Length: 107
Image (tube, rainbow, N blue to C red; front, side, top):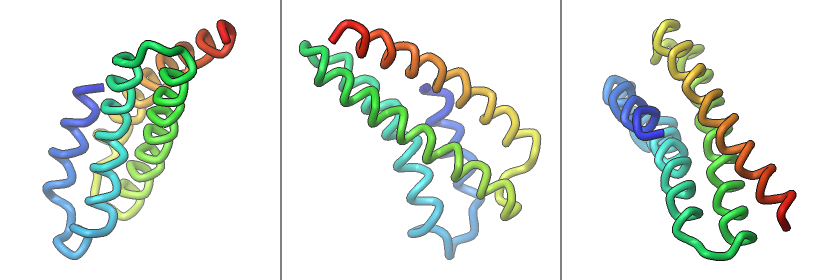
């Protein structure tokens, strides 16, 4: 997840300046939200609270995945970097979803 967040920050440095308060800001927030909510969820002691944070992390990941797609379609992100980040996002998503499923079974 750390690699994912850092990559998002790195590639958004090259976005058009007019996108600073648009897609640049949005993709950075969703990318960071993924890891921050994951971390905060693990800091919580109650399973239902942890589950809530993991679900938020998963939603943020899905948001950032679409924004990666949008960025690639707009020409802000090259196809090779897009595929690399898409693969990483899929791995992160599978990991978070497995944890969500496990917590749902326990509660």
